[in-house]
Amino acid sequence: MRLTSKIIIKGTFKVKTGLRIGAGNNDFELGTPQLSVVRSKGIPFVPGSSLKGKMRSLLARYYGSSRVENDVDIIKEIFGDSAGKENGQFRTRLLVRDCSLIQSEKKNEPLTETKWENVIKRMQGGAIHPREVERVPEGSEFSFELVYDEYNHVTKTENQDNLSSENQSHLKHIKLALQLLEDDYLGGCGSRGYGKIEFCKDKMSITQHKIESEIYNKVGTPLTNGFVWD
Image (cartoon, rainbow, N blue to C red; front, side, top):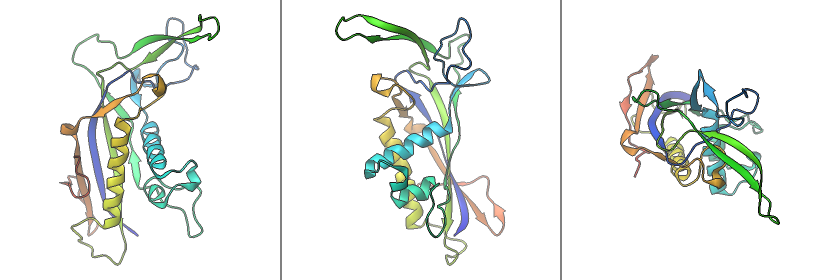
């Protein structure tokens, strides 16, 4: 197998209900929510590992797999296989970058919101264990970028214009994972209404950056074959 191009999928997704990806309690400070969101230089972001893990999990559920080692080959071909096989491990083809928050032009607009939650005592009906939860508010937007490595068999012609059926199938499964995610949730507390997102179809782009004769085309050309968002 030879690396023949990198396919870059870029876009934006909008937060439809409060989004929470927790940072743990290690950075708790007086006056801030105990359950804070993950940040980079003070700005909330979505780790690429969270998005990639959710995509893989949804595809695994689609194929009926409950354990990573039981995933079908096409999932392992896209996301990799830490367990490997007798003839060697599957190499990871999909890179998912951290998603950056697109900040509003309005000055002093808060980047997060807090929501109070508690536990209900079933018999008495009262609330216990109140806690303040931080999340990214509805309406926020994040930019995302996926990088898919296209491999072809060394017997293929060097200047192959069309994607192989295998690579087309991988891209269609990546699209399927994103579509399934829209009707699921990203981050934590999804069963309580958090984490609904929507991909902005008009802001989606996909380009193919070919490697030909030891020259890497960083500009890329638009690609629709195998990844048309209906």
